[in-house]
Image (cartoon, rainbow, N blue to C red):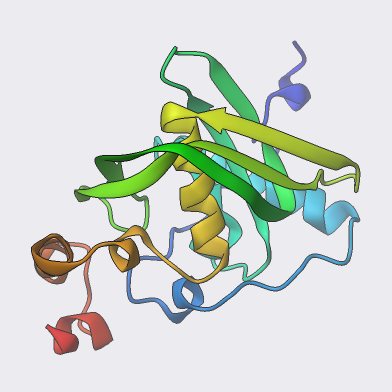
Length: 187
C-alpha cells in the first residue's frame, strides 16, 4: 500500500474542540463543494482521529461546522469498518436498544452508559460526491449514531437523563481539560 493511500497520511492533526465549545452545539451546514478542500478536510479528520486514538470524528470536533465524519471502528464481531460520509442522514436505527459505555474525543477520559440502537443505516456521499450507504451493528452502529448526533449539534450527554447526565457534566466541569465557561457556570 502506498503511503498516500492510507487515510490521514496526508492530513494534518488539528486540535479537538471540547465540550462547551459553541461549534459542538450547533447544527452543521450541508457540504456543497466537493473539491480539493473537502478531500483535505477528510484527510485532516482521519489524521486527527488517529492521533487521539478515536474510532470516529465529526468535522465540528475540529472546528469545521460542516456535515462530514470519518470512522475506523470495529463492530461487535471485530470486523473493521473504515470510511467517511459527507452529508450523512441516519435513515434507520433499529434492533434492540442497548445501554452501553460511550465516550467522546470532545470529553476526553469520560464515559457514561448511553442508550443506542444496535443497528443503524446512514446514507450520504463520499468526498467525490458518490452515493454511499453504511450499515452498522453493535458498537459500529453506536459510532454511526454518535457521529450523526455531532453534526446535529448534540453530544452524548444530551442523550442522558437524571443522575447519569448530572454525573458526566460534573465530571466534565472538574476535568483538567475544561476551561472556565458556560458549562462550568451552569452546574
